[in-house]
Length: 208
Image (cartoon, rainbow, N blue to C red; front, side, top):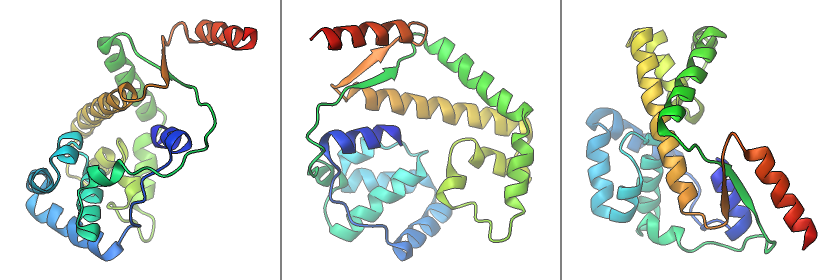
């Protein structure tokens, strides 16, 4: 998402091959039949670096890594180090950085509950009833939708779907923070003091 766009502008993207629908469908069948743990073990054997970075519960990135390796015969991690040209312009990235994990988890729960109160279940139910609906499409594999689809299709209660969505969102937030720590150009901002910090940064830049 946003992190990848920032990295692309700053340092360019790796010249990875485009998606192969047939190969991706084959990998999806293997994922459904064997489970994520088995495919993650395969990734660890083929590319330990990417396997350590990609969580077993992140099927989209897991399948993409295996797809790239199958198409190129090279580890994904090695190819990602071969970034293309960026913009060449000076970049400054700012990120709202939660200072308390407990508060972050509370905000995640409050956000999901607000979405549920605003009709999230009805939205997902309507999407599931659309002609051509495919739960394996990337948009429907995203955090929140994936868990609510399980509920709408009768594979989980609403309480279970809520719990699973909260857990998945926490894991996503953890991965996002890990990514941000690897970006030396990113300035961490306190969510409660962000406006004041940005104002001060602006004054400093203007004075120079």
